Length: 270
Ligand code: DGL
Image (spheres, rainbow, N blue to C red):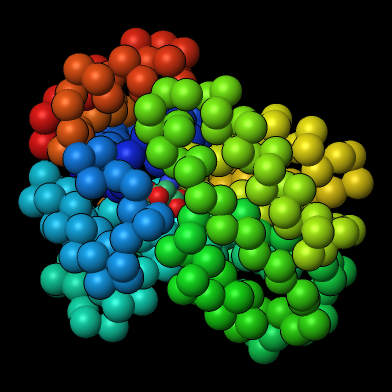
C-alpha cells in the first residue's frame, strides 16, 4: 500500500526525497496543492479545508496513511482532523513531533512529562500562519520546560520558491535571519519550520553562523515514518515507485520539481 505525502506545493518534495531514500521499497504518492499555494498567508479555516480535501484525495487513491509534509497544514489541520475523527483504517501524521523530539532529545514515542532540556534559546523560522498558530510552542510545551522560542514569520519565501526565484528567496531568508537576531541575538538552535526551507538550508546556515545548530525536518520525518511503519506493517507496501500529483499546472510544476530534485520528475493533474 502506498503512503501519501501532502504539501501545499513543492516544499514537501524535500520530505519525499528523504523518505524515498530511507524507505526505497515503499510506494509513495505525492500531492502538491500548487493551485492554492502558498498556504502560509491563508486563514486557519481555509488551510484546514484545503488540507482536509488534499488528505481525502490521497485516501481515495488508496493511501491509508498520509503524512502532512507541511508545517502550515500540520499546524492548522492535524489536531482538528484527528479530534474530528478520521475514517476507519485511515491515518494522518504531521511533521512537528519528529522535529520536537529531536530538539528535546527524546526517543520516539516517549510520552513522559515535560522536562528541562539542554537547549534554551530556539529560533523558529516558519510561515506567517504557522507562527500565528503557536502550534510549535504548544507541542514543545508537552515535552520540554524552560525553552524560549522566538518565532520569525518568513513572509515571501514560499512564494519566491514556488516561482523558482531562488535569488529572491535567499535574499528574503537573510533579511528574516537579521530580523530574528534583533529579537534573539544568540539562538542556540534554529528550526526550519517549513518544508520549503530545506531548499535554502545553506543560506540559513550561513546567515546564522557556525554556533547555531540548524534543525531541518526531512531526515527526521523519514526516520520517524520508518519507525511508524515498522510498528504498523499493515500500512506499508512493497515495490517502491513514486506518483506525483498536483492541483496546479502539471508542466510548470514538473519543471520546478526537476530543478529542485535535480532529476526528471513528471507530475500529473490530480
Ligand atoms: N511547506 C509548507 C510548510 O511546511 C509551506 C506552506 C505554504 O504553502 O505557505 O509550512
